[in-house]
Length: 243
Image (tube, rainbow, N blue to C red; front, side, top):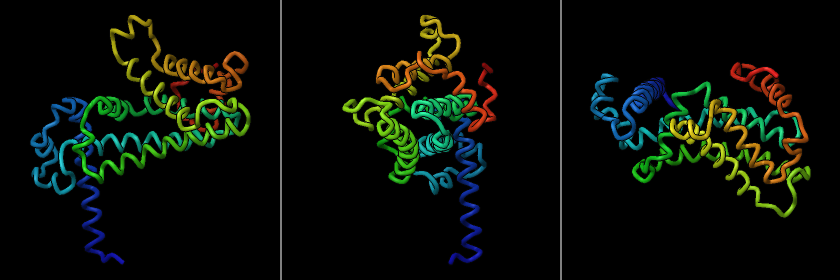
């Protein structure tokens, strides 16, 4: 059993680590990954750079830790979404809803998460931070996989189609790719994108229709499903327009 001094040191370490990540998140948003300076971070938290190295091995380590915090929050929302009671495709829609809810309610985390997907910093991060990131990735993927497997069991996805893990990956890829492209100003203008969330959700529907995941978009009132998802799972999602 840990003694009181040990517990106090653990609490102090956790508070200090959270302080580092809070300021690192701010600096990543303002300066980008390449502009993230550990000297500036140390001045910001009023600790030495050596103190930062007691918690993280490198700035790549810090960036991955911030991204993991974002992914943890996304995972929490995904797991909430899996509790939605409905048809398998409605449950898949609830996960898509959760992803958009994360985008709207956590813009800082969302922007850093998207930024880090284009940075080649993975190999320079520590095993500890990579393991933490993969743990949260696994939570997201299991939520998707759970709904896909339910669709096969219910006969909503045709037997003999793609393996469940490939369908889960396709769902994640379409969603993440749509989020990234929706943030490119020139492309938004060329594609006539006025509502990025609507565009992301339309692309999700196109994929699921292409997979013949029933009921198809034309055969079901998914607007009503969205209202149920908000009422039953995400009542705080005020961004969803009624009707």
